[in-house]
Length: 229
Image 1 (cartoon, rainbow, N blue to C red):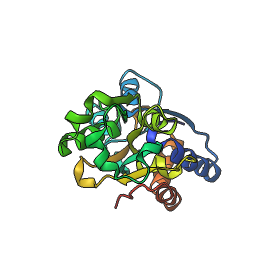
Image 2 (cartoon, rainbow, N blue to C red; image 1 turned 120 degrees about the horizontal axis):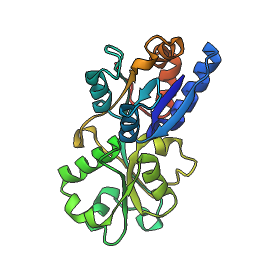
Image 3 (cartoon, helix red, strand yellow; image 1 turned 90 degrees about the vertical axis):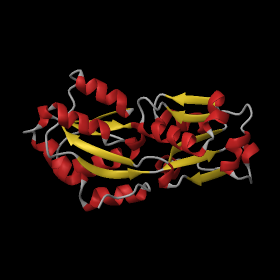
Image 4 (cartoon, rainbow, N blue to C red; image 1 turned 180 degrees about the vertical axis):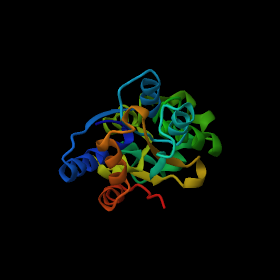
């Protein structure tokens, strides 16, 4: 089967797929990109069987258009936004306060047009009034993985990234960090949907069941995602 995976979920997906392949004997091919890019590829006929999105909007649109299978759309994880820096100039300071005095230092976020975490970051900046201050210094990653890479490599001094990325990074040595409260932006509800071409494909339907099972939920917890009820 072929699995389209939002960039923020690449590493957890690897773990879940490895467990699924071992348990089922099926083989899974994974493609990762921003949710917006994956959605555009699917609408244009890309041969994916299942989409693991970083939002609820694109799976809903696929369901409404008939490209996704009605009744298979479900929330598999709840994402969290994280303010994060590895830059020495932020050591020992209040991360949030620095957004008001960013100066010429760069703030990385994912592209809000295609990446749900980027959309959430922009909402947070708008809601808190920081956007007018930081907008000239924003650098946009094509997806949340690239936004995180900008911060990790020093190409941006600070970033609004995914909580799970910081949790799984080997370069976690943050100089300042802050988990953004969930009420500061729209929920990052990550949904899965089965696509029509795989409606009768056993590997795809079995994967959906596996994704909601105990092994997958343990992986989600390990990467600090919120679990759906």
